[in-house]
Image (cartoon, rainbow over all chains, first blue to last red; front, top):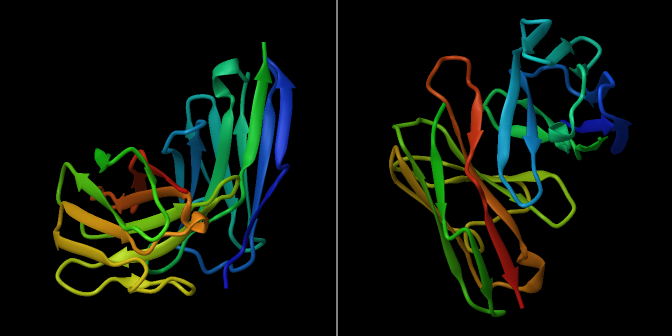
Length: 111
Length: 115
């Protein structure tokens, strides 16, 4: 059974810092990996999707990498802003496209 | 991306009653899922909603408790039956987009509180 772990569980940084969120998964037979953002009381916003054949994806200040063989992904956020404060969720997709989620990293960016 | 709406956005229900949650998508999609997010926890897949056939449930979830309908490619319902306080959660529907990269999009969720 696929298990997804996210480290750290919580992170607080001053505005402007670059930061890295980590995600690991136990079964490397994934279809793709998605990073989401969840604001309090809200649904999920898709940030980046990496196909299993890809190594990284970039969108603005966000860069996600994938090392499928070692079961790891990182989400890099450059020049963090208070508006980046949210919970970040990593999820891997199986062959039937069902997602297995990590427990999330709660990020606070201090002004 | 797909635009997904859910009704109701939140509800407070009494123990022993049932609630039906609706999920509407602005375009036809093949794959649709229902997830649960218990307080302070991450998301767990309840079932895959199959159009024209019975839903496929994950381990720990059964049709009698969470009946699902999917009459067409843009709409699905999830019913939470015979509710108890342990059913208090956010329930979210999701769809796989049609762009070919299998990106998954989520509705805004239904926040359910059972007293």
